[in-house]
Image 1 (spheres, rainbow, N blue to C red):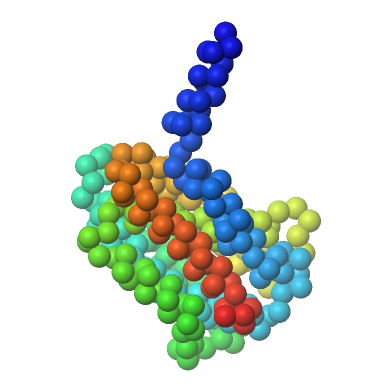
Image 2 (image 1 turned 45 degrees about the vertical axis):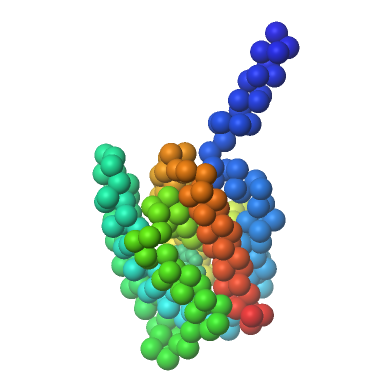
Length: 234
Ligand SMILES: Cc1ncc(CO)c(N)n1
């Protein structure tokens, strides 16, 4: 009896944890650093400096414009995968929401009097965009690309969903921003991306899995740098 019990536990540890779950556990501090950044906490508790928010808005518009070609390259990779074609549809849906997102940025920028045409990309943003550009290469494996895609989306989803949790004091003007990434639908979409990533990673070689883990860590680091830049600390 005792042995049987032990075996179950071992199996659970070795085989049952999805790869993305193992990564989050292993890199918890960095993950929390990206999803519970002081800038995000300041939105949640209402102490946010609007000049930081405006800086974030302008920089993120530039980021999202470079995110589109990366997502498109991931779409191309997914279309070459043997499978039921459902991955491609999920990514296509993601591209459609990026189209909405670009319009949302334009609208928001005009509300906050931020001129998007005169935003100068800052160092942390340039580096992040360059990282994405390098990942558009056809040499980059699909499991790596889809893991990065999921990681980028989930950082915003977790961050803004945290802002919306009970007891928040979000300034009225920023409620829409929090809902944009913190809403339930976006949460479901991120879960789907995560399932796709886990399915790909499960079939991938150890070499590809470690490349994907390194890329995942890079995303978390770039996200922390991006928030730091927004509050003027990078
Ligand atoms: C920097 C950054 N990371 C993630 C997202 C999610 O789309 C975004 N808009 N910007």
